[in-house]
Amino acid sequence: MSATDPAGTVTEALKALYDTSAHAEGEAGSGKGGKGRKGGKDAGRRRGDADHRLDAAASRLAADPAADAELTRRGEEFVRTLWTRGWQPADLVRMARRELADDHVRLLIGLIRSETASYERLPHRWQAQLDALDTDEWTAPDRFSYATAVLELYRLLVRLPRLDAVGAVPGEALPPATAGEPKLLTRIRALLAKAEATTYAEEAEALTAKAQELMARHSLDEASLAAGAPAPETPGAIRIGVDPPYEQAKAILLDAVATANHCRAVWNEAYGFSTVVGFEADLDPVELLYTSLLVQGTAAMTRAEAEQRAAGRKRTKSFRQSFLLAYANRLGARLAATSRRVAAETPTLLPALASREVAVSARTDELFPETRTTRVRAAWDEAGWTHGTSAANRAGLGPHPRGEIRD
Image 1: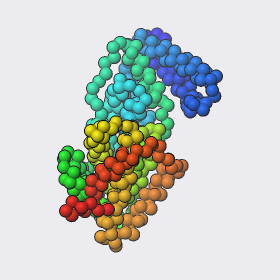
Image 2: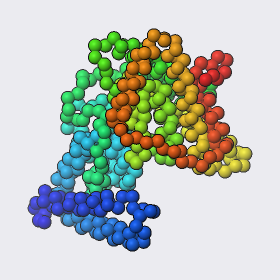
Image 3: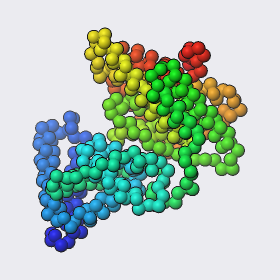
Image 4: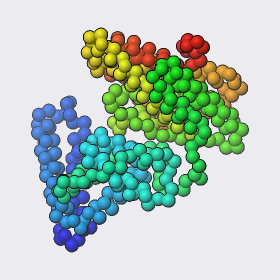
């Protein structure tokens, strides 16, 4: 292909993506339990052929600097297509971090920023996702390395499947923008930030308990308003990253926070996130509380490990797994108890609250008709479980006069 035809150069080079992605899909699930030695040799040969085609495509691009602008434009098209297929900026970056290297992630962030800059307004929550992205750009050591990294990134993008949409897509009609965040979120954020920063367990207990009570009372207020509204509100959804290590324990913790606050969480292990379904007023507080409890739990686990080492015991993976599982299990019970106590203070609102929970369950079943229960896969460590339960108790999610902890 002539270097005077940049579009043609890129088109020819991108053909390698579809050849290699087709082979990759054909090999999915063919690891241990596949077709044995012969299948392994065939798979290895296919991967080698795919790598050869990708190298040839990268050489073609490296020889034609005029193709760079067109290559970037095609990348923005891939990203734009993924928006319409249910993906959001944080989802794409999470997948790139799981599957590729830091260089690919920085290339992807550049594409996301350039593509989203073309819209006058972005959907709710997208700006926060963009603000959280790194700003460092990657400078490739040579043109071949650059072209190879771009093609490897694009190969990932073209094979990502469709996801269930959890919000508007850029370019669609959006509801009126709101100025700043709701006062409730600001108060919850401030309380949880103080809980994470303090070195005094009792202070962290009180701050976290107050945050959960605010969330529970706010949910009741919203149920009361909805009961008198002319048209019922439809539950929405957000995705929250659940990253390794110990992602199963983290998913259980998120499920506990969501359930206690009248939401439902569905974990997608393959793509590293949980989808939380609920009414809009409950979604952001659930994410805030989950993130804070994870920070507090990790800090408590680090302290417990230090105690283990001081006692002459080695820290182990099973200790950390058991700690986080116990932490999530105990917190789930305490969060639910706090929500029940607050709801019982206004029994006349219980029917409205129940109606909203039914709507959330129906929306969850609509989005995820084929969910299944996953068994916990973790080695059990008694010391880890004991420390994790104690840490959850110290989170103090109920009233505790004179320091007493109650369910």
